[in-house]
Amino acid sequence: DYELVHYFNNLGMNYQRKFEIENALEYFNKALNLLNSITQFDVSSHPALWNNISMVYTIKGNHKKAIDLLYEAEKKILDSLGSEASGLFEVYHNIGNNYMEMGQFNNSNKYFNKALEIAEFNSNFPEVGKIQTLLNLGANYVRTNELDSANLIDKKISKLIKDEYTILNLDYKNFKGELLILRGDYEEASKLYKQTASEVTAIYGLNNMRTADQFYRLSSFYNNNLDFINAIKYGEITLEIYDSLDKINLFYYAEQSLSLSLAYGQLFIQSN
Image (tube, rainbow, N blue to C red; front, side):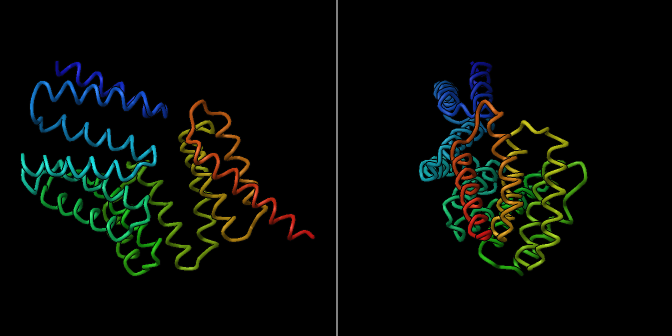
């Protein structure tokens, strides 16, 4: 029975990676229902499934539903394992992510910090998890123009980051780009975003969602700085990549299409 639970969970994860969200939700729920018929609480399987199901709702943009599910998971873990359980880390991290997406940065910071406290309680906790939470916390501080706090997070990450953390290094460079913008160093931010786009392309290839998202970030940077020629250049690359993919996030596609249209309009105004 446990093998079937893992099978359904793995199927859900595969569908999630392909952005087949409803199929992912179906198999995550099958796994959870089967697990509930076997045991009231399994220390490894239950938290993983609760987080996976909440992630589906996060992707769907239903952040309130995701947070409600995560609060339920928090209560069950607290009741079963206590307030220092390592399983609370991902729950708190994901609650923080959802509040971040909702623009509720104070609530988001609260839960990112709770996640980091759990990591400190558990001395062997993986550094990768801590770094990702610190990156998100730092991004919040950038968005709320808290430069001193963002700089402090930058120092903490720089002590933990390692060359072999390939994906985290890319995320760290994007955070550094945002931090450079907050510091007013647009030239260095431009160089770093271009470098990161090249690195992402080298790792993932052009026909990849991660690459599209990186060029979207680059296009948005130039759009925000009124460099509409470069905004259009990288925006068109972004849409070309999206067009090459079988499954995409339609919200991102629509947002990039709108941004590109606005950039063309602004360029036309500038030229007349």
